[in-house]
Image 1 (tube, rainbow, N blue to C red):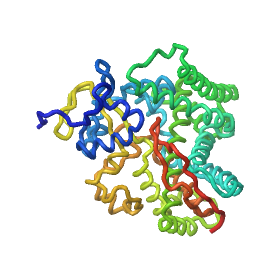
Image 2: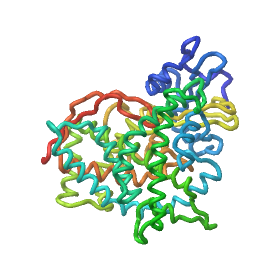
Image 3: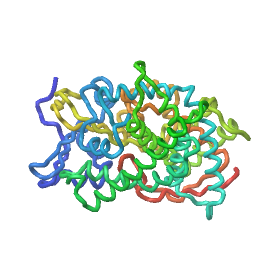
Length: 454
């Protein structure tokens, strides 16, 4: 039965509530909210008359209710998703209802385990290029966040486009950070000016959007002019263009562009975050690095990996899962409640903004012993079986769980294994500041020293 007392939460500033805390340090704000107020917290932000309430849900049971048990009642409808949808299109990440169901039916066959396993060679090829770059790094020092972002972007672009990689990588690398910051600023602003107003922020954001749309449209048009690619081509753009549902429907050019852009953006950002923090953590913890290196050097000795090696690298997999626990790329996930419901005994009103926070639930002391400690053995099979399904959910859950989960794990595990096989890594920056944009990111250098051999 729901409690009659109000949902607890921070008092905030009398005039703006927790607005400054949410905009300047959102991750710390949500961590403190759970610590100080419990598993369901109400955070208010904005001046009187424009105030918004965020209902944060931190318990695994509550997260399961939002993402799975009552998923239809919690929609991707809030100011952040409105801005994201307007900026990167109505692709699989942002679409809803019939649009989402149709897109999922068309795209799901392209992400079967067998299909995804075929991309192992492309991953290995990009890792070799990265290794050459690292061998030439001045002083052997590289920034793990920058390097993994560049690597993941090149990898997903190659899998998407085949040979048409360089232009797409350059355009996305330059423009996506600009567009991401624009989306974040507008998504959390108490008042949003129209996009048509010629403000400096609008001009920067819209120029970045035009550049991203333009490179995708050009590649799609050039591929169409060549007849959609070779018959034997297996890049995702070709496969998306050929995809049909049971009624023979296909993606039109605008829908195709939206899917490509979402895959470029989401496909590189999430994997890059996981790999960068895995390297950072191993560089700080030599005892775990040694175990992962021994495994990689035994399993991948002197050869390129295949998808079958994924099962043969269990410790490397545990390292990545633990990195995703501590630093999930989707650190905060928003929804809107359609109808009133009850979560953990508290009434969530109809229309409420609801936030689930992997970064917070992944550090919940009721579900993780010594939660700040890096310990890959938390993901031993017996430990995973004993834990609540939604104590760890870096890929979301329920009907909107990430379609690319297997691809992300394949790419991440094989990449980390190959890098540990060929390099020693040592931390230069032991502390890294965090920031929240469209995804979690490092807000300070994440330098590591890499030494070839071992």
